[in-house]
Image 1: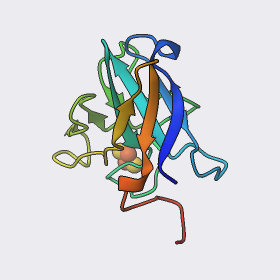
Image 2: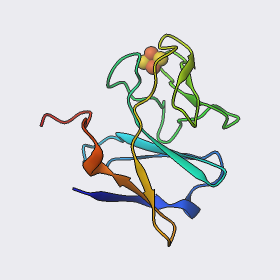
Image 3: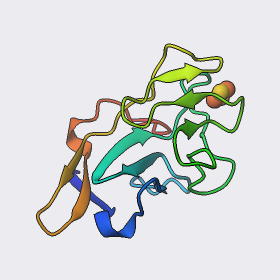
Image 4: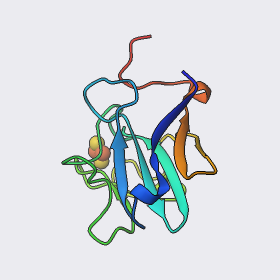
Length: 123
Ligand code: FES
């Protein structure tokens, strides 16, 4: 598995996040957040409790103002750009980034071949 199409940049509004299930596990294991014209990708796994998904419902990765990534379990907050936790039980730790590529026609692609971990998978 090399590049995985996630969605188009135009599918996301500014400060919108969306989860994806590239390994078809029945739950979203990666998510992307748009901030301006930039998009950031992370695994949907909280560094406080490895494997714990962040949102309380599908795609609810951000706070109400769309300023920060939030884990619903215990309220950890993360910087959208760096993935670093700055408030909460995992303060000082970071979300694991998912490397992204953008095609000229506006597709957002995950560079899955570069990943060394695949949360939720046995192999
Ligand atoms: S599992 Fe995310 S803050 Fe505790």
